[in-house]
Length: 383
Image 1 (cartoon, helix red, strand yellow):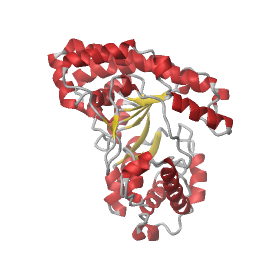
Image 2 (cartoon, rainbow, N blue to C red):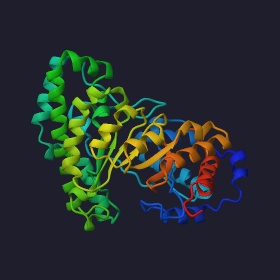
Image 3 (cartoon, rainbow, N blue to C red):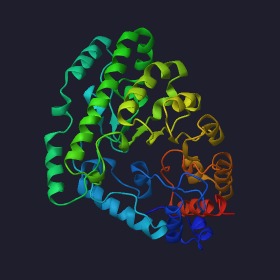
Image 4 (cartoon, rainbow, N blue to C red):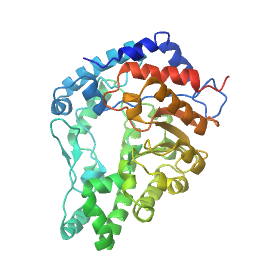
């Protein structure tokens, strides 16, 4: 059974969801010259599992037909109540390699959880060999497995939409703390700094090489919308880097900043979108985010919207409603936080109201509707 909160459904009886989305489409300009602040949702696999009381997470990841059927069920509910489908109903069975795989980190699958990238070693000598192999790998023959190429060709022949590859990546903090256990990584920053600097430099170079290959492949092979795109800067770049908060300013500047600087300079030069998501409390790193030219952000719920606007005056702020407040809070508490964030950061039109992070598991469509109604009523420029 899907989660549909009666109290919030009652509060939003008058909400016209189709009209809401129509107005939302007219609110995307990056200035106050629009009816209201735009808003969006980011439900993910964690959210699906609780929303639909999914009995097996393993089956969801391992059985494509089951996953597609579940997506159809979820989309049917959300279309009915919020007039949007959020999930692909024809998901891929295969995928390209990931940059973490280059360093030997592979997904572990466990019932009741999402896939988790497993650390490769806690032996520095062995990790030096891992870096040797990563450095020597021919990414053009490694990046796109044969089974992925077969599925790509089948979808292309069938006239199905194909994705743009090489448009973004997890960030260096999260990549490093996947390849190595966090406690090992941070000890080695002090005990084996030369090894860690080598890791940083190989990661930066290989991220550029790997994503350039993906970008060139998908443009050449007729990806969706690629007719009007070149495999270059105008694609922009997105970063998901939840573990940024584990790094103090010194370590972030030494180990993360150079990776992002190199990747962004190559993959998103000039005046294009540079988006950073992190669920974490990374307010101490905003000066460096600004220096990197990050211009669209979604930070953790403890990072104050006013602080973001102060440190990053020209960035689009996607947030900053705490996901658990939307899931558990009273209608008035939710309203007060949305209004406060809009007051602090929305005046210039560079804000998109959403949760600070993805939609929390356990959030139902009634609360989604209340979120929509509050934005419609309280985050306006035309009053």
